[in-house]
Figure 1 (tube, helix red, strand yellow):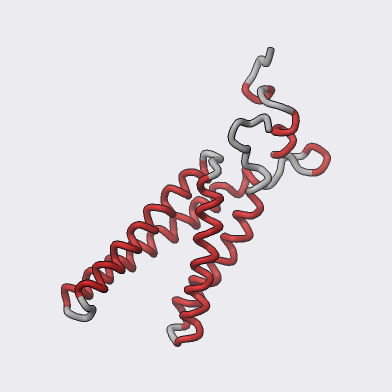
Figure 2 (cartoon, rainbow, N blue to C red):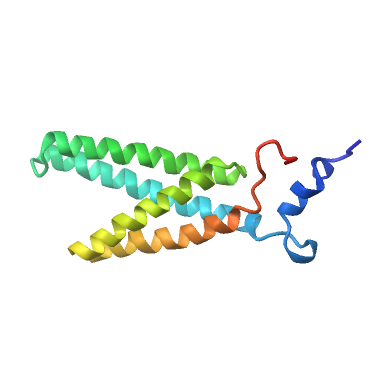
Length: 149
């Protein structure tokens, strides 16, 4: 019978979070960094949505398009916020959503670089690449549902 929380579960699930020679994997150490970067993305998405709403009221954007884009961005901002929380508690949702979002963001960033606004495109593409690599590093250190498979 296990006596502490670290001895519960199968050896395979305990070993999944360790590196070569039984040393801890880098996953737990980078979780706060990944969550913080996803938080930055959340803030940038919310700021862009706010900009869309302001531009609609100022007449700079078509009403239906601007409001639709703003709502779309807020939905993704909520998703990245939930992904950041999931990463902090070693949940699987944050990995799947985060990796998928980074692929989408990389496409948008590359499109921006191609069409002219270089600094937002470079920021989006750079952030997407860094987070994609960090999220992939977390995959092996995140337990599978059920813990003993």
